[in-house]
Amino acid sequence: ILVTAYDFQEAADAEEETGGKWRAGDPAKSSRAFVRAIEIYNNGLQKHPKDADLAYNKARLEFELSQQPTLVAKLAVPLLDFLQQALNSHRYALQLNGESADVLFNTAQVMISIAEYVTEAGIFSAQADSVSLLREALELLSACFTRQEQLVEEQNANSMEAEGGVAIDQEVPAAQPEASAAGDTAPEDEEESEYVSVQAYITPSDLLDTARSSLTALTLLITLDDPSNVSPLAKMGITLVEDKIPQYLSQVEAEERAQEEPDVLLERAQFHAALTVADLKLGTASANDSLSRLQQAFEPLDATANVAVMCTYADSLVELTTTAQNFSPSSAATTCWSTLSKAQDLYAAAVKINDAEAKERKARVYESRGDVELLRFNLATTPAAGLSAAIQKSAPTLIKNAQTYYRGAMNLFRAEGDAEAAGKVEVRGLIATMLEGKLNGNVGQQIVAALGQKGEAGRAVAMDMLRESLLPEDWDQGVM
Image (cartoon, rainbow, N blue to C red; front, top):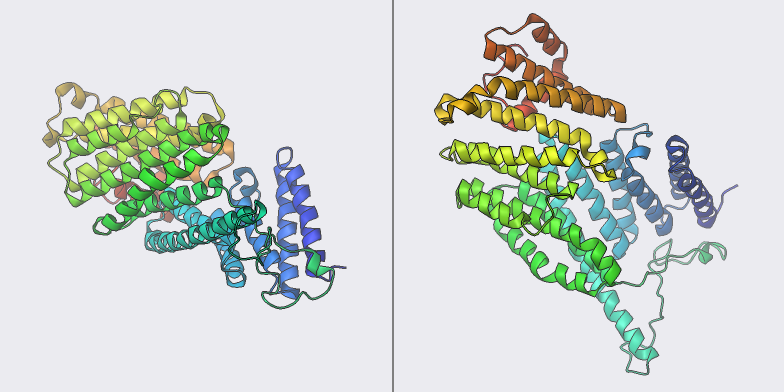
């Protein structure tokens, strides 16, 4: 029988240990164990609603679980709903212990994860909510950073005292517990008092993580927010990439620094890419100048063997092209064509790499390759673009390529067990087939019927493609 908060924590710990043991060998069994641990935390909080440790560990476990794709696939609820559950848990933990650097940091991480999911899934109706979440995440990360700096000062003071220096506060112990289970009230019993959160030692790695998370939130916020709001965000980001992040990176151990530096450089490039697109939207930079800035941002990175760099660079080139077409119509079609061709080359090289990162991205890369061919098809079939005769004659090949890549993506998503993504990319393939029929002056009734059967889900995919500039406004002529 579980009575004290300590009892519930021990029981949950046992289930977490079981889940960790089966994580690699049996994801379904692992997921069930983690869900049981969450249920134990829930039951414990019903009996001990002010226990900050139970609240924190429940929230922590939910977030950790949400970051494991193989385990998420075994959950009974969609990922976005589970992330929202994790956010609610973190908000509750924050109410009980609002000064905890860990709770502040983790809550911000959940908010960023929700915004990233919504953006990647193309849920445009939730964009405003994502902007609000990202702004709140930045506030929490700022508070986290303030708390971490305070703890570093305390650590330094304790170190001085240990070395015979002058202590700032003679009463501060070397390891100071955070707010206990019941806030500022006494533990319920002697046994429960044994289980107490101890504030971990703050290291340069912790400060680096906070700074990098802040940059991630800023980069996504610049992408989603109105370009007119970007200026203060840009200043914050530049301070991070030019000052704070290099400072903390230089302070970590050499082995960790070598491991983290490539990711830090990629995040820096993504930030500058987001700024470049925002400036293009505002009209403060031309398409050619923006392309040069983008090339400079990715120049220090390995775009020949690093799949993450190759795909991120290609994604940025595609976004720059569609932005130029929408916000700078005078942009030379030849520039757009060459930029898209560069993106396609990067995607093509990425799928030839055979490491874990490449395999994980392969389905999305095939989908992106289909999108690029569709964008190039649109350019090739627009007489006003003034492209060469050879490019215009390539239209039939381009639209067939798009269908091939979408079909490949669909099969890969199905093999991964991602039926939702497979269904969406299937619609993209059907639309590409329809566009081929329009090009040849003969849209088959079988394709029209297949698209019609997709109903609201199919129309939602088509709307996404319109927003991504993959389709002209009159593409369907009433088919969907």
